[in-house]
Length: 187
Image 1 (cartoon, rainbow, N blue to C red):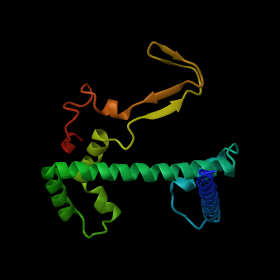
Image 2: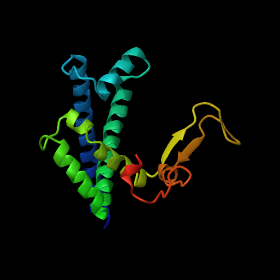
Image 3: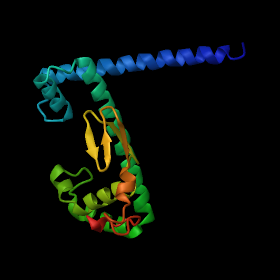
Image 4: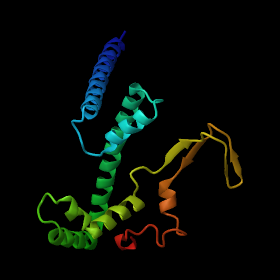
């Protein structure tokens, strides 16, 4: 009986979580409707997904809701990780941070740089690429074979899970000399 309040709390929290999920789904579906009505004329990932759905009638709106929700959640998390790791590496390499600061001072016209300003910041691009190489937002990924494939000496049938590590690839000395060093200039 001592666990009963915890159980009630858990079911209340679960109910709250379900309500939030329903609100998210309503918001995503409203976003679909706005895009379909032409409220957004920009080319973005959602407009591309909706075009793909129109070209391939095999994906339902329910499936699209799942894809879009996962895509946005994953993009948010990997972006946050990339920025966090980049700031950590900059704090550990003050000479890189100073060079980047100089480029930002000279290359950005304002605190809110334009797309053209950002495109001209080549050292910033190198810093971010090197940060993602040294400390990737995700250390591994996984996929499932959808058709038979030969991978070196291995024959993989459909539905075989495949796990691979970006971290291990990015730290291979065959691909990157001194792979543990943070050197934006390598890009």
